[in-house]
Image (cartoon, rainbow, N blue to C red; front, top):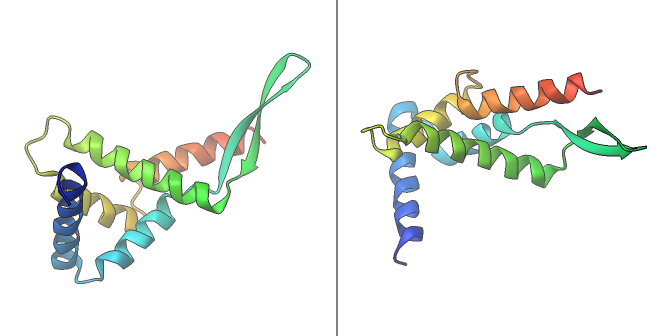
Length: 123
């Protein structure tokens, strides 16, 4: 493997080593818990009724929950590394640890809470 895929593979590998050193836990377990805590339960969808657009709260399918959680985590790490001298591996490890602890300062957990708050308001 060469190129971008190998770079990302090595980045995740180093981040997992950092997670293991900092927490002493299995990094895959930390990743799974971070995804669980970053996955939204509710979302909104648009319904057009008589020319008027309504936002209606709906439950999120399980695979979409995982997809959204991974997107929230990736976007949070991307924002954190932008114009920051700290390596991406450290940002990824810190973000996964904070999301695993359900810390509201973690961008992925914050995004999930915001999405669920909007869905709850549109019930």
